[in-house]
Image (cartoon, rainbow over all chains, first blue to last red; front, side):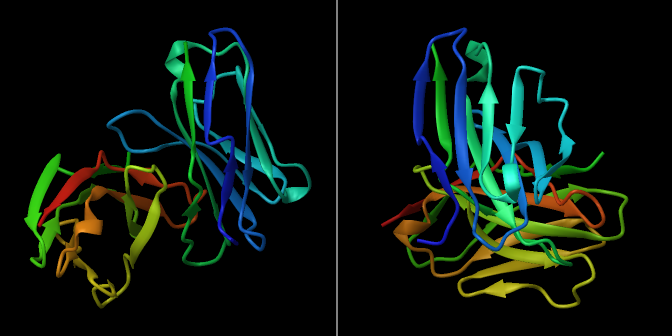
Length: 114
Length: 115
């Protein structure tokens, strides 16, 4: 399978714990995006990388959130000191940057903070 | 600020019929891209179709076509010959040329196909 993969698919944690999600993009894609989707809403942009450089972060991304993409390959999204409001679906997407850029999404990680 | 509006929270369609899902957008940027994604209950966002703001022809991909009316700032998705597997959430999204490529999504429309 050459699509975008995410791990884990589901995560249940207690408030105050740290969690880390991983995203493996399509191999030739140089851009990687993170989005958050709450129930009944469309996804909202969090951050993106071009190769290993993190080029934009949304104001939604508080300082409890950190994302990395070492060597421009897979990416991790870490949430420290989780809060119940962090409960959401976290979606990763990748694309190959050119004139018309289609983003392909992974299956997402569903986070539930108790 | 760019904005996407999907006014239909839920739609029903009979199997084998065609259905139109509405999307309007608001941007002052002359160059932009419009996308439609499908999200089944499993959660994965599936790319359906793309329309560039300078494209002269309406985009088509199999049973999906995009009714692009630039002056009205609308980009409605038409699904022909609906199938039971089309039951899902559908999102319209916009991205601007020259920016990060980030997608701005509407709130989605839930489509249910009746047998």
